[in-house]
Image 1 (cartoon, one colour):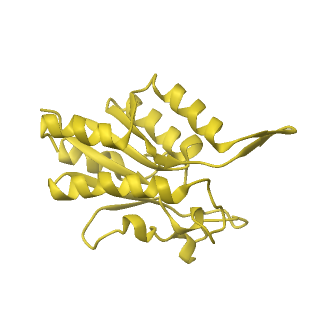
Image 2: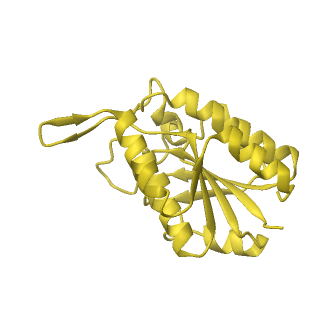
Amino acid sequence: MMKTALLLIDIQNDYFPGGKMELVNPLAAAKKAYSLLQCFREHGGHHVHIQHVSLKPDAAFFISGDRGTDIHDSVAHFEGEPLVQKHYPNSFRETNLLELLKGWGIERVVIAGMMTHMCVDATARAAADFGFQVIVAEDACATRDLKYGEMLIPAEHVHKAFLAALKSYGQVMSSDMVIAHLATELDL
């Protein structure tokens, strides 16, 4: 049986209504991420909250010491649960995430979080490069509209384009499908 861990990436206050970098539909994505988190908690599965804190002095969001960096209440971090703080889109870069996962004997990661086109993408690709099997829970991720030149690219298109590309690095499925898939293996 394959040992699996859940990575909850940057589900932080700044991405929600009233935050400094509000995404499109972050609450719906966080609700799905919470269902995954509860599944892992109930079955004693390994899970990691990943928190981005910017080191840039001119950062617009995720400013050190600001409540915007706090993990959102929808997926509240409980005392004793692993929390990895990062400063780059790739959750493995200059963090202890790889050592943590290897220490647990993890072979597969389930990824949920924000933003699909940045930290979710960078972390999923890095996880695959490190030899992990990757599952991205598509409805437990959120992103925002992007602009390229004069073109506005709606968040839904950004989200789907990145998910389509990530299928080259692993599986992409709904959070309900992830839960059903893992339940058949009882490998948390």
